[in-house]
Length: 273
Picture (cartoon, rainbow, N blue to C red):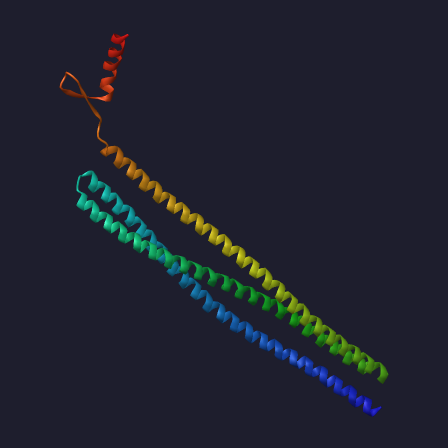
């Protein structure tokens, strides 16, 4: 019997050590949460800086597009004034700004994509911090429940006479429950992480597809606007430079337009009839 009691005391000591390890795990979780919060603040600062750079590149790109339009208008004004050399110089400047705009657009798009990735990573980190807080609450509740159960068990063991065999069976059941609970917790957490990762991958893929589609639509609209503007300019130039058709009237020694000739042709047809 003394040997069995010594074994029971060893079991109690093992349970106490489990509670102590749980307290250590809570402290480690608190430290991890503190580190995650610091990482989140650093990541958020980098995201803000990336967003500022992205806005600067976008404004620079829009400014170059404005310069392209202005130099094109100057070329049109120069042509209307009959100064082709000045119009040619204006078009050269327009081409330079078009090249700068193309380069800035490429940098802007890359910065925009990088900023979006940073924002997604920041959101993912925020979600993990929230999940860690929820797990901390659960662990604290379980720790308190285990402490309460242990205290209740100790009180009952002091106030009631329990046979050594029953005590051994109860401890064995407790150990089995703790093992089953630990295995179930590991399996559940692993399955949840896999499921959440798959959904995050689907969300990221859908978001990237939507961004790419919107980018293609925006590029198509910009290309259409440029084509319409250039087509309108060519139509106006062709209309203003078209010579008026003149027809020389026989026997009169003067030139008339096609509209002035129509009545004469009608009279000649009447006389022939």
